[in-house]
Amino acid sequence: MSGKLYLVATPIGNLEDITLRALKILKEVDLIAAEDTRNTLKLLNHFEIKKPLISNHRHNEEQKENVLINKLKEGKNIAIVSDAGTPGISDPGEVIVKKAIEENIDIIPVPGACAAINALIASGLDTTEFSFYGFLPLNKKLRKEKLEEIKNETKTSIIYEAPHKIKDTLKDLKEIVESRNIVLARELTKIHEEFIRGNIEEIIEKSEDLKGEMILLIEGATKKQKENVLNKLSLEEHYNFYEKQGIDKKEIIKQIAKDRGVNKNEIYKYFIN
Ligand code: SAM
Image (cartoon, rainbow, N blue to C red; front, side, top):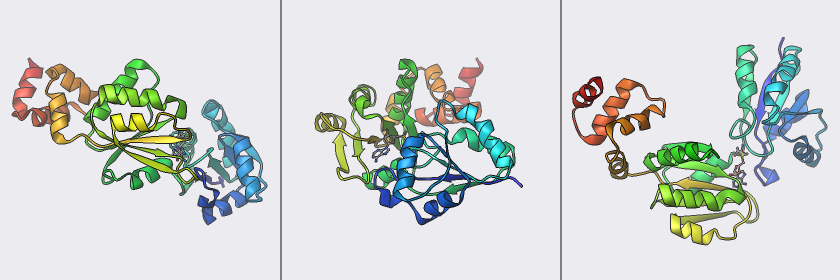
């Protein structure tokens, strides 16, 4: 019988955030696949857990998947952990999960810290619906497209960012998303935990020399802001905007008509012609 694949969340700073269940699973599994074995070793040493470790980082995830799947098939139980927080969320995990599903292997999430969720719940922004963007693309064109998407997003947007890139990302947000409330959540669960709330200009001013791990949360666009932006586009650009989000043709036409306050048949006829 195959072993089980556990996705174990670990702390994002404060070691007391590890759960009792996570400790139990880490003690019980046969092997721990870690994003960086040196980091995980520190965590394991702190909790006096001795387990074989295997590296499973973003760049070798595809190669490691066969090794891990074979071990699971041999009946070994494996825990996947990342350097911090929940595996699979801007961290390795997704590749092995997909493969394990194909191989009928049981996958068991072991919940715990996730920086995005904790930043969101304390942000003061709308938590009923939100869009998680992870790290923005580095490619200029793709990055601009993502920022345009965020500009038109009516839900709260969440972005992860590396500390040394936060200034540039705030500048890009100012240029493309323009005026909007932002929350910068820093060093969650650590001594210098801080939430800076304000408009983009204020955040830029206050974040001059900030250090540590940071997340940006952007207030959703009001319906009016979204319509104003989209209705300035040509119909083709408006169509492309929704197409890039993977929405099907019929739904795009409905949405364009709604944004522009016209009958959907008018839009349909335009594209047929
Ligand atoms: N898997 C992790 C999770 O569940 O949140 C995220 C890993 S991702 C590689 C790292 C990014 O998460 C950082 O660049 C930062 O944006 C965010 N992050 C992680 N820990 C954080 C913390 N303690 N405070 C603020 N942001 C944090």
